[in-house]
Image 1 (cartoon, helix red, strand yellow):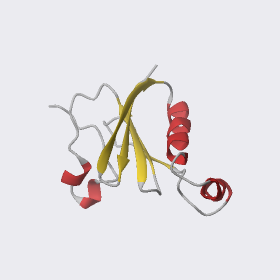
Image 2: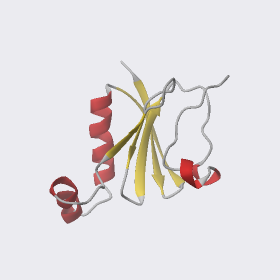
Image 3: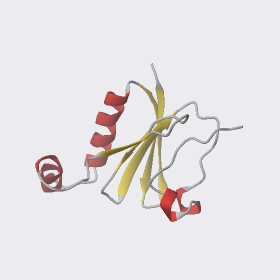
Image 4: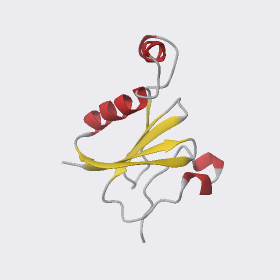
Length: 110
């Protein structure tokens, strides 16, 4: 079963939430939606489910030869799930160029 590292962020800064889980991508997607929903009001959750809000959408970033990365979108708080066996420490979001802040992935250690 795949292992994922789930990390929480508030804007560019890590919240300190970091949890390793084992499960398939569909279960990790559900977990990310639930984590993101904790920062929404009841009305925002309803609108994100049935309306126009994008807060509970999950962005899937998969590049050829690189592991899948899943990320919540639409809120000040967001969560990222990536391959837990990634051998490289990712730089802090605030140290990355703006165009990469929302597209983090595991870099090849070579």
